[in-house]
Image 1 (spheres, rainbow, N blue to C red):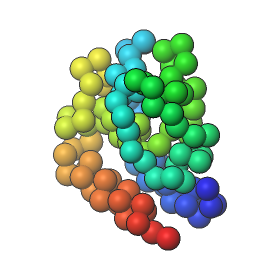
Image 2: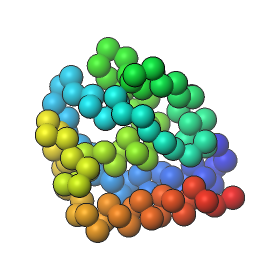
Image 3: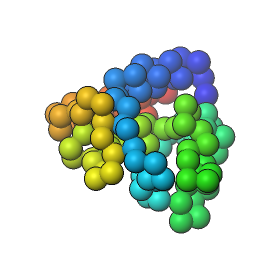
Length: 109
């Protein structure tokens, strides 16, 4: 992934609060996800087989390199998981704004 794209994604990622997940919860890892090819490259590829191939022993093996959609899941009330609590939940408006900015990055060449 190009350095400037990595930096742009990282700046966006910093604005997403961490979720405190219940141990053994990996609900977000069992959904088919979409992400930018640059994110896929950064995380070392992606294979869907009923769950994310980076889910190892009930934990994310690429946690620091996980894509936007994995980070935003559970960060606010409109994308919540009942077993996980964000440190500072995002409002619906904040989540929509982050998605808008993420989509702009997807379309940036």
